[in-house]
Image 1 (cartoon, rainbow, N blue to C red):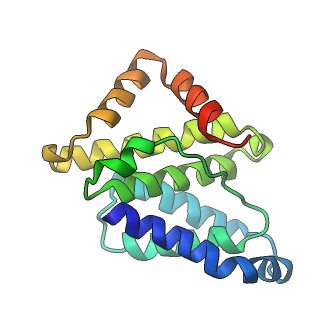
Image 2 (tube, rainbow, N blue to C red; image 1 turned 135 degrees about the horizontal axis):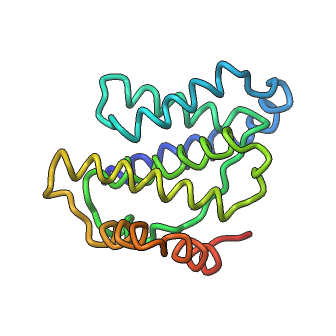
Length: 172
């Protein structure tokens, strides 16, 4: 349900603002260094404290900012198809963190903005970090699918998983 809520917010913002987006991006200047620093801070804070008192407001700011700025783009890819089907209450936070971590990667590595596999890898790793925080807070929130990805990360095969999923699911 919450995944649908976050996804609906993300998709809703994109769809509602899409007609305005081109105009807004034309009128809006590229992101400022202060905005980029704020986005990086939110992405990192959300990984370690997704239930912080300002977290929902910060996530909303981040989504709207990503839609509006003309110089930062995150590429969508269905890497976590089983996450959406899990029905777990915090799946939206995990999915959202994937987007935020992808944006953080692009902000920190502007020379790699066209390296989609590296971007997707950063997104998956960020999502797994927030998942680990969520499980630490409540062990009942375990998801075998994500536990498997953590094992892949620890075994050094997560990049292979990301490449295979991206090849099968993403428009590159």
